[in-house]
Length: 230
Image 1 (tube, rainbow, N blue to C red):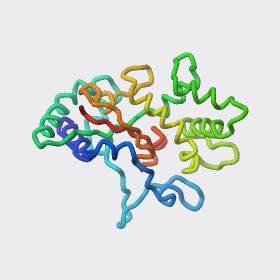
Image 2 (cartoon, rainbow, N blue to C red):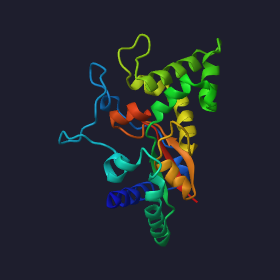
Image 3 (cartoon, rainbow, N blue to C red):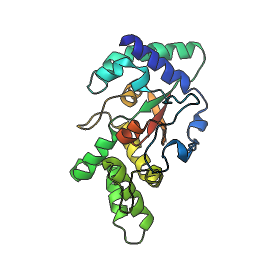
């Protein structure tokens, strides 16, 4: 488990080296065919050999994450390993950066929709805008957000497909940013976001549909958080 955690942290830091400005200007670079078949069903992208092609993050690279990520021991266990990775990056002259999975984001959004007293500013803004009679686009965004969080197709749709995810982008990105910056809470799954921030990382952007695994789309809407260590 510890070896897996160390391998993941090294991967997360090394994979996301680069220019800070480039992080803030990422575009969606996905082909619709990677995600839906002719019947609109969510599909996994395959490589040339027909094997499933997953972007590697916690679930694939860090065996320790499966046993620790859903409790509050994740940061405590992995922080010493992260410290070693940061030190090594400093020796090599790199500016360390990290890409954090946002496990549990969809469940968090559902909870916030059902419990407005929890004071999610991002959700409150979406709901207020959706009630505006003069802005059908804001209503469309909120309905798409609801559909992703609940995995219930919107009216007139048979599936929660790529179009729903694209319609929800503006709202889901704000919810993801709020979730990534929240350190503790009843619906917060402790993970890389909390780990990186505990070591001085700053959130620089949300990579929307940053993970192609359909299971991750269901769990987190496909969003991932990019951090720079300063």
